[in-house]
Picture 1 (cartoon, protein in one colour):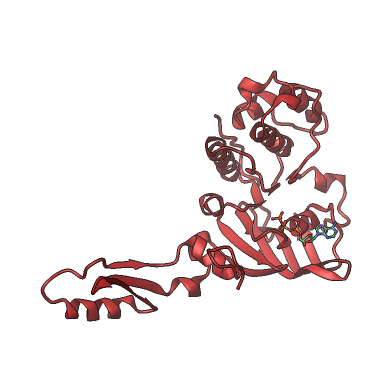
Picture 2 (spheres, rainbow, N blue to C red; picture 1 turned 60 degrees about the horizontal axis):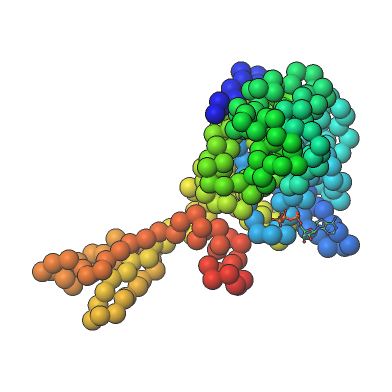
Length: 300
Ligand SMILES: Nc1ncnc2c1ncn2[C@@H]1O[C@H](COP(=O)(O)OP(=O)(O)OP(=O)(O)O)[C@@H](O)[C@H]1O
């Protein structure tokens, strides 16, 4: 596969913010499904929105794309309000929605050639086919593509117009592990070329692999924003020390594991502490705590 590489988009002074959101509110039937979200996405960064089903990810992203009206707050995307921005602004944005209506009748290549007409300087079809790993399926009718192949075609259409800012709503749903990794390479290539990417995902590994920063939405509110390795900084401070004593597993959750280890070693002067492990919460533990869910699937 060939990664897409283009010259970085020049960033005029003072315009290093691609997306600026303040106090975003969206209501359905009087219920706020997005409830006062503040968010900044820098130019050139990959930003991932995580959150459980119904958290408001798609609603937020659709407001940013200008396809959904908001009920409150300020939104600026590439310097303009999406609610009133025109065709020239839209041409600078790429959208891969959760489900798109790519027609079934044409082949993959014909579909790309067809949509190329809508862009001033479309990426060449051959380059797109290679980038999303569909070169061998170029002559296949869209109706006969697998779910993952169809998703890759949708991604190709999203980047066809060389967008400065690309929105990807659950882009790898339905892809097998190989296709997902290939897609990650595609996103990395876009980022290297200066494209800003805002994506939603349910895959924590995808967010960890791709995102410079992650925002966690829960119940319409942004509960944390940080690089994946720093998400839930408070939660990560505690460690769990486990060891075996009298045939049973003992466990201490502590912000100071070194002190616990010192005591344990002092109590075992002759040798090792049986079954000793020290673990810190991983991304999944932190995420589940942030969204208020237990690993067993319940909600606190
Ligand atoms: N057109 C609509 N009319 C009424 N309610 C809606 C509409 N669209 C979304 N909702 C509700 O708004 C809430 C947020 O939905 P949204 O699709 O933004 O969540 P999400 O985080 O993207 O979820 P998922 O991970 O399942 O895609 C949900 O409770 C959903 O039922």
